[in-house]
Length: 333
Ligand code: NAD
Image (cartoon, rainbow, N blue to C red; front, side):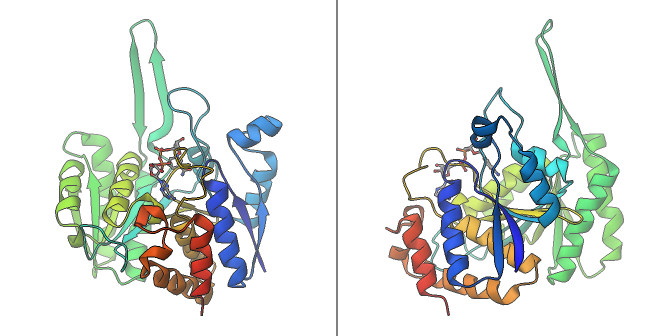
């Protein structure tokens, strides 16, 4: 039995977490959960945004499944998500977006895996406000090491999964130094992977191309902010935030989480789609080499998508969060 740290999170987090736990139990997946929370919930309970017990659990288990955590807009505490990524150097944010039979969107044949640099750029936390002059600075710090690591991860993934093309997304026409550092990292690494084509696109053009002809893209690699925005865009191409998985991966630790947030508008109603977290959990199973369990659950989930009424409301169905979970379980072979 592998022990996994489970962070339910805020808003719809506990509801979708319960659904995933129920499916895992029914599929008899050989994992046990060590539940630890973070954010406003734990702060209210014991004054700790990231409890010491959560850090100890992560350090021990090295693998976690995480629900979304609310971050206050404007003021308040620093994002728990960003803090955890930086604390454990989870420098890769990997977000696959693939068209699925049964999930209808205007786009077909999308199969993109986005690699977002996860610890640097505009999320470095270097923000200053000069009150006297009314000037706010936000510094997008990128390092050569950070660029090298994420570009290498994208190429390694492409090789391992027999992908044909890596597209670097940047703004090096305006951000001459920071943008060039990123694109040059990819260009330097590319010759080591002669079977993979390196392509590059400026971010604004990339957005247009993605909603115009998304099937031309394969693996994408980009900086933190562009990756954050592009991953939601890619989610929109394949059915929305409720269906897209994500992983934060470092050298020897990984936290798997849905791309979406805590969805306060639907929290507590029992109608959230647990697919994004379930798909993240399936990614986690592949990561810990439990491929058979991953494939079995994925097949059952895909069968559920083929029956529209068995899906949640965001996909045009009628099922609640837990009914969706039961429907997946009913298709387990
Ligand atoms: P959101 O992703 O929570 O919601 C955007 C829209 O998508 C909402 O209409 C919501 O109802 C819908 N949605 C999201 N997940 C869904 C699901 N599983 N099923 C059905 N519908 C779903 O984005 P937001 O409203 O901008 O952010 C809310 C909070 O979440 C903020 O505090 C934000 O900082 C936080 N957030 C956290 C993470 C994370 O923990 N990784 C990621 C993004 C946002």
